[in-house]
Image (cartoon, rainbow, N blue to C red):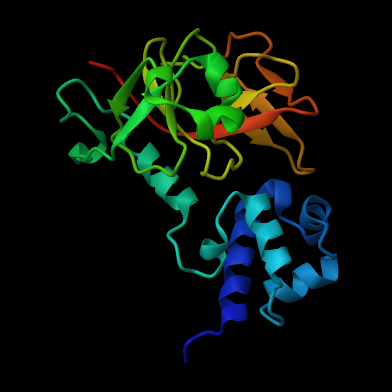
Length: 240
């Protein structure tokens, strides 16, 4: 029997909550959305149809579309995770993870770190001439994605599982969900430029930013109030 709409929404919500430490309990999600804990529980169990306002609030909290809650769209979080498997793209375009050739997914703007810090405000008014250049991106991405050139050594750790060297390109997707241990680009409160770090979320939902370079000081810091995550890094490559 085909599941009902409320059952689909319940399953999608349950999966999102399980995957997000910051919103993994009814109490945390209630604080973020303003929806009552009892209502969240009933929606999650597929007992009631969520109202339009509640669906929008839940979608905004998890950075997904309402269509995703209805099961009508592929999970952007999953697409972003898949893309990170192909972070070894080289000049030849052939040396990639598992030797799989990843097709280009359209051109994205290469922007400055100052522009990245204000991206949420300027993206709708962004003109072709505002970017340093438009570069083919080899990863699936959502609307509003952009490219940055890595600067500094805070994320450079060649002995670790992941490392980002100065000069490499990273693709950043604002529509991907910032889950624990993801690489993110964030603007700290009162800072003009964005910063690139690994997101760490503790069991209480506190969000912190951590450098991959073990010698970087400070290596980890709590995100100050008023900080925002501009997007999730969905892959890297070496520019030609």
